[in-house]
Image (tube, rainbow, N blue to C red):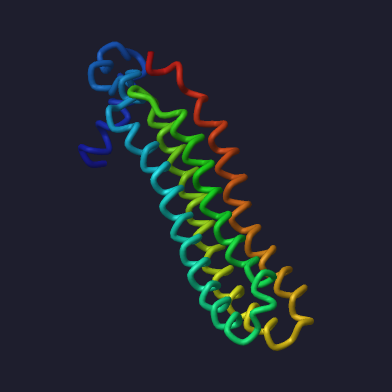
Length: 192
C-alpha cells in the first residue's frame, strides 16, 4: 500500500467526523453567481439572433422567388398576381422574428439570472435559424414552382402545398421560442 492510498481513506473519515474543519475549502455558491453582470448580454443576443436570422431567411426567400416571378411575368403577365404567393410567404418569416424579438425584449433587465439569459438566447436562435431554413426552402421551391406554373397551370396546387410545408418550419421555431420565453421568468426572484 502506497502513502497516497493510505491517506485517502483517512481524509474521507476526517471529513465526515469534522466537517467544520473543511468548510473554508468548499466553494460557497452565492446568489450573485446566478446573476452576473453579463447575463443580459445573452438575452439581447437572443433578440438579435431572432430578428437577424429570420430577416436573412425572409430576404433570401423574397429575392430568390422574386427572380422566378420576374421571369414568369415577362412571358405570362396574367398570372403574376397568383405567383406572388412565395414572396408573401417569405415576408411572413420576418414577422415571426419580430414577434419573438418584442417578446424577448420585454424580459430583458439590468439584473437578470444567467438562466433567463440563456433561455432568451435559445429562444432567439430557435426562431431565427428555423426561419432562415424556411426562407431558403421557400426561395428555392418558390422560384422553381413559379416557373413550373408558368408552363403548366396544374402545378399551382402542388406549389402551394410545398410552400405551406416550408412555411411551417418557421412556425415551429416560433412556437418553440414562445414556449421557451414562458420559462425565462422562472428564476427572476434570485437577483433581488
